[in-house]
Image (cartoon, rainbow, N blue to C red):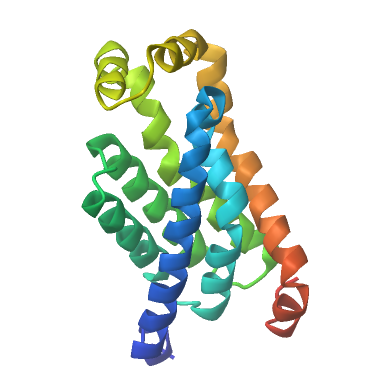
Amino acid sequence: MEESRKLSGKDLITIGIFSAIYFMLNLAAMFTGFVPVLWLLLPGVTGIVTGIPFLLMTAKVRKPGAVFIMGTITALLYFVTGQFTVLLLITFAIACILSELYRSVTKYDNSFTHMMISFVFFCYGMLGSPLAIWVYKDSFLAQIQQNGMSAEYVRSLSGLISTPMLIILCISPVIGGVIGALIAKGLFRKHFKKAGIV
C-alpha cells in the first residue's frame, strides 16, 4: 500500500501534461487583466477557466505531491516568462501546501466535493498577483505604468483600491473555484462517473 502512494513515471507525465494545460489557461485568464476590475479578481477568473485540468489531474493522480508539483511547474513557467513576484511565490506555496494537506486529510478521496475544496485552496495561489497593489501600492502602480500600461488604466486601477474590493478579492477564489469545478464536472460527467467521482 505504501508503494502505491509513490509517484510513478506515468504519474509525473500526467501531472506535467495537465500542468502545461493549466498554465496556458491561467495565462489566457491573465489577459482579462486589461480590464482593471477583472485583474483585481484574477484568482476567481483563473479558477473559472482552470478547473478542468486541475480536477482531471487530481482524479488521475491520487497521490501525495501531485498538486505541489503542478504548482511548482506553474511557478517556474511564470518565473521564466518574467511574470513572477516574491508575493506570488509566497501565496502559491501556501495554496499548494493547504491543498495538499486537505487532500492528505481526506485520504485522497475522489469525491467531487473534496476535489472541489482542494481546488479552491489551490486557486488562492494567484492571490499574490493582484494583492501586490495593496501591499506595494504607489510603487506597484508606478511600475506597471513604466511597463507600458496607460495612465488612464493606472488611474482606473487606483480608484478601485479599497477595503471592500480587498474582501471581494479574497472571496473570489472560492466563487471562481466552485464555478470552475462545476464546469469541469459538467463537461466531463461521464469521465468523472467512471472514475467514481460524485
